[in-house]
Length: 234
Image (tube, rainbow, N blue to C red; front, side):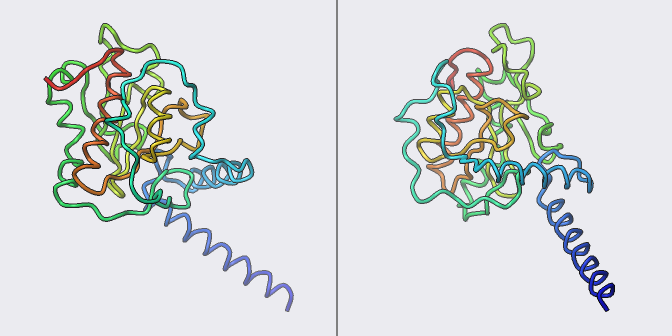
């Protein structure tokens, strides 16, 4: 009797674990190999970070030194509450929120629009995101840019990408700009700190045209940080 109960319990637990693994794969895996061993790695990281009581909205650990490409005027306080995130450590995603059709169209082509617009077009290219396992388009700084930031290579020269599943982004901005984005309510820190620099952050999905403009300004700041100089639309 006892052995039958144990076997039944193990079977139920195994099925629940397998269902959870399948759910994680559907969420995109965030560049982690979509295998069961990859899933177990993410689960271990999640447990470790839970025990650390990590607060991804506290930017006090981010340096205040270095260049700044965002102004308080261009980054207003984000209205409303912070969106809720999914339960996965990776991929770092939020629960989807409504977005206006025009805003969605602009966001969907944002990476390519930068690559087609001077003066950015001479410094960047677009390609599938290496950090996301090729599931979305990303901007990369060209490695032969004369003024390139020495730290631009830390995420494979990747500067920003949009997540098609929820419309949020990851961007690599300066430390000062990362603090501004977080303190103004537009994003939060990346949870797995040993995989990325401190200023590789999540930016929440925009909900309308005005918010897309703010997101675009944040991506522009990421390009400036990688290139090592201020750039604006011609």
